[in-house]
Length: 313
Image (cartoon, rainbow, N blue to C red; front, side):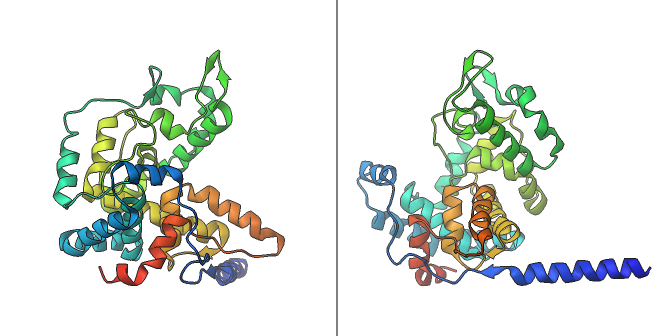
């Protein structure tokens, strides 16, 4: 009994020490000027004969007038234990720099419904994804039962063993796992209000099922995956899950709390792979020095416009 009590005490003390080591990121941007905007984003905006200012105002105005959407954002953020401003920031970043917002939320529902009759699959060069991940190189991933670690492992195996390499006499593209197998229309494609990548949805389907109650996604049913990420209600759940994962990764891996800095969560929503980025930050800070995570161009805008965006809530 004495050893048990001592073990509990040590466990509590260690937990308290770990908690004390977590550093809270200061508000605002670390960069005084906005980091460079990628050329691809500029090109997309030129092609639509628009501007970043016009696109920002369009998504801001949609959020301002659509009280139903704001109510959904607040409800969903509550399910995931995050401040709704993080979801607002991600929506603003996506629709300012990546896509142009539709005028009404109803348009997103109509677009999602249009996929109901479509039939397609996740595959590359005639090989379905479920057959591909049955290859022996992926055997190490079988130990993971949760969707996030399972698909993260599979993505890592792709990068290490297949990407840009010749395997069994077959050359594989030097491209991202999601672009090769999970985007049957064209590479780089994301959909819907939240602009969710299909592979990201597969990774986070367990969390979304647990917190929001939506059915788990299956890589064998590509149509259902796309319908899920295009439906505004489900898309919001996946947005919240991405943000929750990012906050948890930085706290658990890098001992940094980003939960009060929407510009950082928006940055991670944009660039993805929060686990690897948190590990990289932890490595940088392991030598005795310390550096804060920094926002990119996308997150910089969110922090810069934060007083205006907070009024939407």
